[in-house]
Length: 455
Image (cartoon, rainbow, N blue to C red; front, side, top):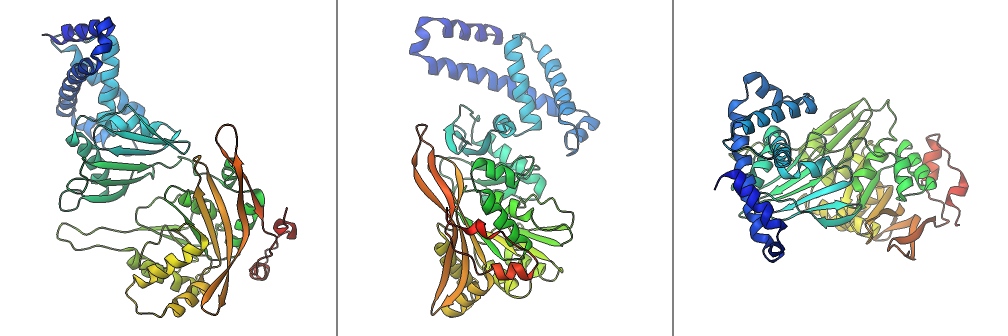
């Protein structure tokens, strides 16, 4: 049967009362037709693009609208050459999908363009979820098969010099806009290649944005600004997706413009707006298993780069020891993030990560190092309603015997839920005046005492 007749037959099937009894078969038939036509046009576009046009498609600075026009015109011309004409509505849909395939990341390209979506999760070719306003939603987006997902993954990682195959089945990377990408493929992923993309706003969020979202209050923001300007060492802790990187970006924006900043990350995603910033990124091993550059290597190297501030994207293992050493050897004002459920858990995690460095240190020595290095812990959480809040701003006061003493300065007090199911509560000071006020005063920074008054 010709393409046009099959399309018309599908429409009649869908319009008939019996369609409700067999929508799946009709949908599969329709999908097969479109996929075959789309793949054929995609292949011909790649074959027929001229040298100048191909060069333009790979140019990172090229105008996306201009590229859209080039691919759309070529797709239109190729469909005109099809033996059977394609209906206008179907033609527009095919062109859109072909443009996404050639210029973007296939079926998920519209999701990446949607500014209301903060995360895209591909669990194999037949299941794509997104996070919107803190809630995870199943979409109707589908890939053709595992090979189609692999094509998109390779399109992401190849320009970055990363590779993904059976010998190296996991990869962390980033999109040109800074969005974080993680991919894992069979044999490790049993249901097919999986892709997770954490999107970041094109314009970094500001402290005013976070105050508007209810993440923190104006008083908390004033305190954190003073802590950064006063060169206190800060650890931002929280679970996955709690907003640690966003908060670290906001804290980094408080660093004065006349200071030299060195950032160290697994996949560069911090969006610092200061001019004097050096960005370092780890490197995986090559095909021969050599040449890997770890976070520890970069943190140690950063100490030789005359930094005023060292910002470590996230500490996960032995680099915690090097980070603490830096904080304790004159590099005040350093910032980092880590995974932990509470300020006390953050200290336990730091102890564990220091031990992962392979140093046979007594626990008391590690705790003394932590107590001396870290001044403030900012604890962040994603609540059940999807909102993100700073739940604690906690001072590390020092050692008492074998224990590191902590003191909460601000806490989030949950009071219940409203009619829409949103969690209600308030961020309030505990009434305790932190000891580091004296250090801030020595650096010429004064805070209004009423910031700390219990309300």
